[in-house]
Length: 185
Length: 159
Image (cartoon, each protein chain N blue to C red):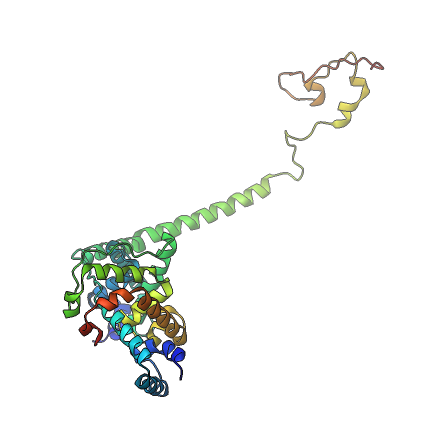
């Protein structure tokens, strides 16, 4: 059963369908918010709030957009409010968390390199960071990212280009020491 | 297409977000420009580093905490929200009733105890001289203990 069908069932009062949706998207939402806030506890808290908002709005749900886009949008708005409340948008220090999908590249990369990548990501303005996280790490298309961030595809293209260029310049020394095999993807 | 233009498009090129025409142009430029190819490789390397960033999964307590949150919300909807609505409605009715009562009870011209005393009386020259200039004269009929405000020391006609 796809997300829309599940959400329509939730609208009709099916609690089990809601549990299924939460199960399907909980890790992805927590991970997205973790990349946005840099804090595991806050990411979980915001993810729960995002699901609660979905639950509260279940009766008003209109299947015009993808459920995941809607969820990302709620999560993104929560992250933005969180930044405003906190008055800054720092990711904090790199946590000592095991990667959920530790590929061969992750094994090769040292903690110091990751620290630098994390700091470089941290230094990006929130808009650029969100666009980059959505498109590069969450696998969203530019159109979908634009929908999540309530902007245009052209704006996303610009944000991603600027974010990548900034990261490239900041991580130049890291890129140079990275094994050549990493650069071929 | 020059290098500057290609530089702007490289990120979208990597993400396969360019139009077919743009992709062909970038492709053609890259074939003949070593500097832009190098740039592309650097961007790819950044992508690899980004994807190697730590990821996070929901904790084991996520489900339990979330259920608790939903329960709290349901409790609010079922119990507190109607109660709050009732309280707000009751407060509104009481306020309205109080407003109506006040409008009916207050006379047109209120005699406020704070109303200013008769200023003519204060400046009346007959008060100067022998008579004591007291509270009772200023506020005639006031059933309070007389507290002299001041005693004039100036005699009639004197300076």
